[in-house]
Amino acid sequence: MAWRSILAGFMVAVALPLSAASAQTDSVSAYIREHAQETQFSGTVLISQEGRTIHEESFGVAERAFGAPITHDTRFPVASITKLFTSALVLQLVDQGRLELDAPISAYIGEDVSIGGVTLRQLLNHTSGLPQFDNIGSLDEAFGRGLPNYQRPMTLEETLALCCTGPLAHPPGTVFDYNNADYFLVEEILRRVTGRSFEELLQERFIVPLNLNDTGVLTWNAVNPGLASTYFDRPDTHVFQRDMPVYWENWRAAGAMYSTARDLAHFAEALFDSPLLSARRRRDLLTPALDEYGLGLWVYSFQRHGRTYHVAKRPGSIMGANAVLYRLLDQNVSIILVANTNRSDLDVFAQRLAEHWIDASR
Image (cartoon, rainbow, N blue to C red; front, side, top):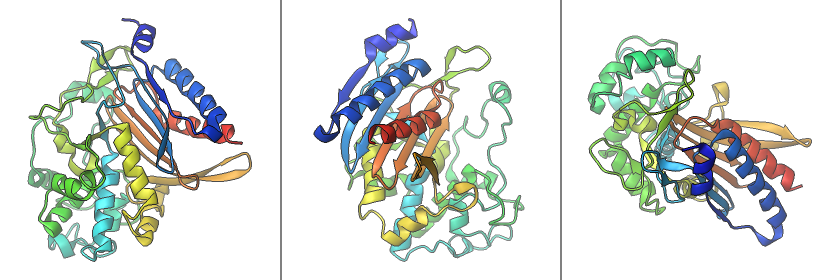
């Protein structure tokens, strides 16, 4: 089926404009549809301001074999957006005095000559110096070898034995090295301090209190109603294929979650604008260290029309599973993109959408 036919047949649009800003909303809506068609975006776009959804639109198909459309209720693997939930769990426990960001992690996991001096903050901002867990060097290598760390089930203990033993690759605090191993170790710290699993903590602290009813942790042996299948656009053929088979739960607190655009927008509102965290812990979250990376997300600014705009951004990408949680901090605007293919660059989409939002509001 041709893409334009899919797009025409399965586009679902809901625009909820604020009466004082209908022209702005219409302009942004037109841009979303144009960009979605140009880039063959397959997923959901949601914009909210101060907790109110002002535009929501879905495109494409959730299951290509049956032509099942994506709707606003479709669930998506959100990959490393999981890290933002994990950081928020940690910061809540810091608020409660049960964890300290700058204490050596040996206080929580016991002595280890290679990692004992690393701090919790360094795990969260990827400056721990732990050896890199993911060592696939190219797409061709992935297609040839698979993803060995994710294609057989592993317990947390087995994962930690692979990633958190042996000497450090860098002195702690000196090099930004984006590494899932950091968050595997954070999960172990959370487990030891609370006696609860990562999934249990998510349920107790976020999913139930915030009514995030379409959010959770992916597992291979559970049928997940409404979950989109994910597809990878191979650069050598430009043909969609199903993502390689993986055990999603092996990404653990670094990337194993699923959600919807609506749930992510609710979480963003709670994280940035309500008492989910204290003001001090929110400052910790949004204070960038190396590579403009805070605690689980990038924090940076850009110029537009002579004005500075401050941004917090948490992307996630695993093969065809792609998502972005983008926040214009001073405007209380959230832009949520969730997709089940890699054909549209969501970092570019989110930034251009933010710029269109700014332009239309002038």
